[in-house]
Image (cartoon, rainbow, N blue to C red; front, side, top):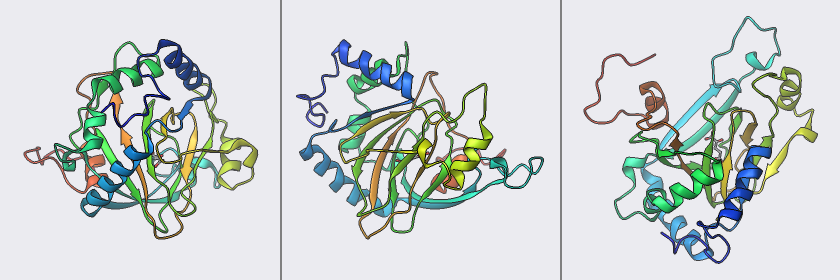
Length: 267
Ligand SMILES: O=C(O)CCC(=O)C(=O)O
């Protein structure tokens, strides 16, 4: 695993560095670590992504930035009544072979501990979701992710391959807080009227990004050109045993784990 990480640039055990990354994450809601993986490692992972891509599940959704159906109690044009389309292909965790370099990276305890310290947490667990713990997200020409807030406190992603153009990770950093939804600013960003509130996070291949998407509205712009965009999404939780709902599994992966109960699926 260590051979994938550029250890000349990133010492996972160095307290001063992890404190600085935590400070950035706390202050900005995002910490971007370019060149976290060395060039050779990126190439190994890129080839793995090419091999895995055929088993990805494609899904298309339409949702508000709050990842909820529109709420008609709000006036027309309100962000709670605005929807955008997203499409992506996802390879679920259980489809990564036992000897997969990406799986090895995700399952390494030193990476888990590094992420925990960067997030400033006392405990951190890998996600217990047999599909969602590790995902490869593949976006092809015409795909995009609409503006949205995440429902989790943090996301860890690794950029593996960029598209020819488009595919930018745009971020309206900390545009809302627990105290203030700032609907007016959100509405302006949705219609591209507050570009001053939006920045593009530099997700060059090999970058590891820690991101708190609950308060920062973000999107991935439309992919242009035939080269697919590859991003690995590494999921963690502060509680052990956290899993996703069957509804989410069905929409994101198109299936349920073998042996899972078929009753009680939320609609
Ligand atoms: O692909 C990315 O870079 C971001 C993914 C994302 O925003 C999400 O899955 O919610």
